Length: 312
Ligand SMILES: NC(=O)c1ccc[n+]([C@@H]2O[C@H](COP(=O)([O-])OP(=O)(O)OC[C@H]3O[C@@H](n4cnc5c(N)ncnc54)[C@H](OP(=O)(O)O)[C@@H]3O)[C@@H](O)[C@H]2O)c1
Image (cartoon, rainbow, N blue to C red; front, side, top):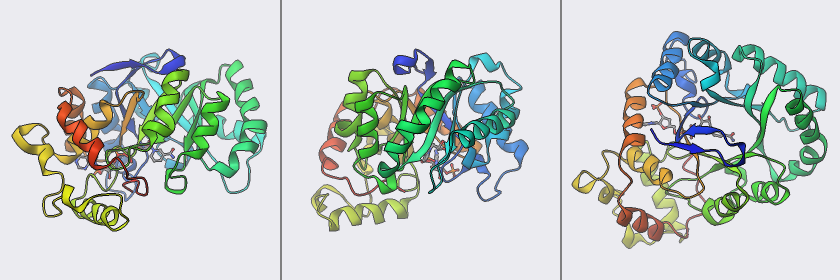
């Protein structure tokens, strides 16, 4: 496992982060796994060297994380969690009581990175002016170590909220959507984050389009129809098969995680699964040699104009 400095936080984090949300929620979304199985999944990741876990009030997985972390050394684990933002602006009191509930569920007395969750551009001004100062108070009180914000990528395809957040430098850590199908965050976010030494968490590295063959075909078809992809660059019968040639990658999810791993300015690549075999495979991806440079270059060229899909 590769470890990186999470920007100006100075935290040393594993390149792979356990994502406890997304389509799987550690197997809890469709009650696919028992709670004990999901706890075991988290322990499987931690014991393989992952030291970063991302959860949220909204995921219903904080208790599972709490149970897993209680069985290991809390001080060696970086926990990231988030306050849900409703359509109506939340108050300072709601922020504080939400954090207290998360701490109780996580069985800890501090959260390493506490985010405002899925902020939309139109919400930015209120939260920057009214809620971030309260987060700074919570930070001074030792309840949170660093302040973060995550975007609502499906509704903010050009990353405009994060562009404002980076300009203001109010946040130590940001979470941004990025994957090989939509690399728009490279110019819109990652370059500036690197310059400003902000910690960057990547979400949507694989999501549905890069883990489900029919979704991949549908996404590529949509990109061809919108003119963001040249039909001549893609064989829809065997999409992205070149990535698997000569054993360079062992699957599309493998290639997708390794593509993000190679991206400058990306620190933690979140990986969400409810399946222990998938977790094992993903751990292999994060331990694998870098993706061949010619594949990275070809993916940059093929998807260089794509901006309208997230892989959702
Ligand atoms: N705005 C926000 O704050 C926000 C939004 C979205 C996500 N997030 C965070 O980012 C994390 C990661 O995002 P994501 O859920 O989009 O994760 P992801 O890692 O990009 O994709 C997860 C999906 O890929 C599948 N998958 C994973 N490994 C696989 C493998 N080896 N083979 C086949 N399928 C595989 C999973 O299904 P299986 O369960 O079947 O493996 C799941 O459906 C989330 O867990 C959450 O912590 C934050």
